[in-house]
Amino acid sequence: MPDCHPFFPYDASVASKYDSLRGWRPPIPERILAAAGARPGCRFLDLACGTGNLMLALHSRCAAGYVGIDLSPDMLRIARGKLPQAVFVRGNVAGMPFAAGSFDVLAGAFFIHHLPEGERALFFKEARRVLKKGCLAIVTRSHSQIRECLIGRFFPEAAEIDQRRFPEIGQIEAGLREAGFREVFSEPIVDREIAVNEAYVKWMEGRPVSTLDMIPEEAFAAGIARLRAYAASPQARDERQTPFTLVSGRKV
Image (cartoon, rainbow, N blue to C red; front, side, top):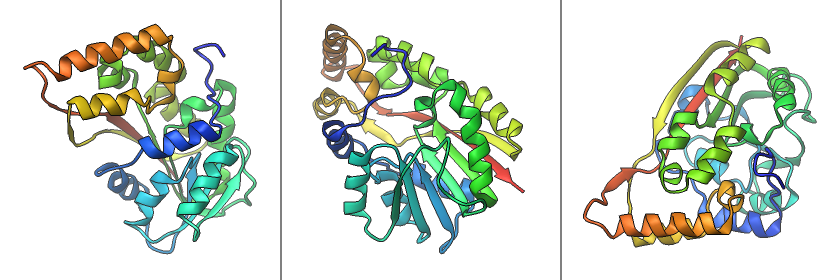
């Protein structure tokens, strides 16, 4: 598969690894719920929900009626096991099997770069169609954030791939407006501090993001060596692990 291809195959082995290595800590779930204006009892669609980790974090903070959609049956199988009260549907967010006006809130994290460029406009239109009057919230990363985060600094080959895969924030904002969304807004979110130590290096050795599976093995090994040397140096410090951007728009 070419390293610039937007889609990564989340089969059973990848789904299991993803579930064990990826989670959502404050303040990300809180910011999503605040931006979306989610309330208990609202109908909430988790876009490209994966193994349900984001939904689990959201559910613990807001008792909405959650539905998840994802293309991977292996991801959905894991999600159903941890959130039996939710509904999970296999499908493409660019062509969703839901009636118009089915949801009060739509939100999703780190999925927009998996959509081929030609499908993004279809997704924005579909998102507006399945919303009643409410908010679409997308968590992603700007190109500068890709370069500045720890993965980008220690694995430059991964940063190069992600800068080709991820749309710029302005492109997402423009797509929302073209689809008819109003009150389009983007804001940076900075994760809490994390210790860059040997435990962090071990976590990174598990390749917690798909891009690390897409770079050459020698590039990955070199990045791990650089990260380990930094973690053992006097210069190592607690850092903000990952900067994100939350982009939102509203159907009025």
